[in-house]
Image (cartoon, rainbow, N blue to C red; front, side):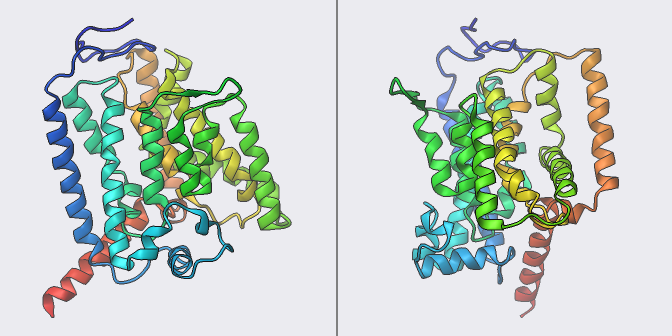
Length: 356
């Protein structure tokens, strides 16, 4: 079932295509995207130029040193991101990262266009682009800035699937693991047995690089499950809950399934390592790419009824409970709290420069 022209802003049944007719005022789309991306880029650059030290250590130092002194001793040596810090200095690298994260607006906007009018898609794009991870990783010398862009492009999936008879795949999916190993779930999310393969690869990686598990692996496993779910809930502002809501009510479309499978395969790849690190440690940034994809799929028209009202109340309760129960700074190691520290540092640096 398709609509020849944009339907009213109401519930669109799962499995339908909202906009299949001729594009309405395409120049307005390009004007919005160009203006919005430029605004994001300039704002982020203004903050990044105030940065006078690395934030995430030793990761930023590792990437910087690896790029300048190329070897094959670190996974960063094999990243598509490597030429950026190799040819550019610290602040120039940050400017490129600002551009990469700003360009994420393009796939986000076109994903929203599948289910919303142009005006609403533009508004939702602006909201998603406020996600803390898209700002934080504009200001650090790490691969996440490029990873977010290629993952969102894979979710948008503007290219056709390639069928080799013995293997079907989407070519843009393979950019993600070439940027960072944690991007491998993007490829595996397309396949039914992807989570199992991710789990096997995660176990091999954990055994090879992390040695014997600590004395409390069960506790670490429980905490890994709890913290991963909590992080996704907070990082997506509760929107992951509405993805689950559609799973049990109207069902999931292709975009929803990709977001769900991406989350599951990411956890399957990460949790074998999570049970081997001290239980007070948690790397939320591994789930940031999946969280961004969830935001683009969860913010869809939803059939509203009694179940929806009850579920919304549950989401609001959990949001309050998480804030009360968790020390925010320890949970969001790469989320909102660390970003606020970045902004405070930039503002302080600007104040010092203005006074000198």
